[in-house]
Length: 326
Image (tube, rainbow, N blue to C red; front, side, top):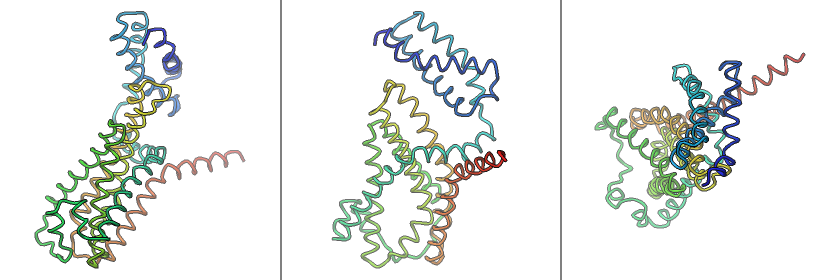
């Protein structure tokens, strides 16, 4: 890219960054609206990428010197804005993460659809003939499935919980990281994991263990699958940025959307931990299947309330602002 075109394409970002910088210098950080601050941070990240590109391709030109001054001026404010405190961490998990999930609901729905597609296909084919299970699961796993085993005496809660948690986070990380394959790898991870659930569900159905099977899956599965779907949405967001960068270069789009994707993945970490605890300490216990399913329903209700917190907060603020008019 020639320097003139580089300047023309990216000047609006630099101008916005300068305008916010001037506002910060005159009014201070506390007077800046949250959306302005988020835009400032995003433009700063883009300007850093532009500076790196300018240094590499244009050398010590006026453009490089200008970007260096701009980035240096913004750095101290960015450092302050990004300071990690316990209060900010709580705010992220209570408000920011649910808001991000809602803003990326279409990708979350697509991520869920890939998983359900794999689940439905494997369930139907396995239900038609149990021999088809080997097409979706390793043969040794199929041969060793025993729905009649009710013993949890050999179950070591802490050990099993740690193993399960590690595996679930691995699946979520794979779904996210494979977004760099234009989202194709992410889709496959989701479909493949759907294969496993659908196949096991079909085998349980054929052997008459529906209630027991789902009572072993859903108590932890509600949270676990949601976290995996969110990681899948993060991976699809990366893929979308690479396929459709919009007004930005693919590199800049990758940086901008990558930040959001990482935040989505980070938000799932506590959810994975809770799901791992449930799977390690509650799921294997000799509790009535009906109670386990009731627990799963309660988990779903609490998760729905958690995701609705930002909406409820906005609604409350709107009511207050309306009330202040009278």
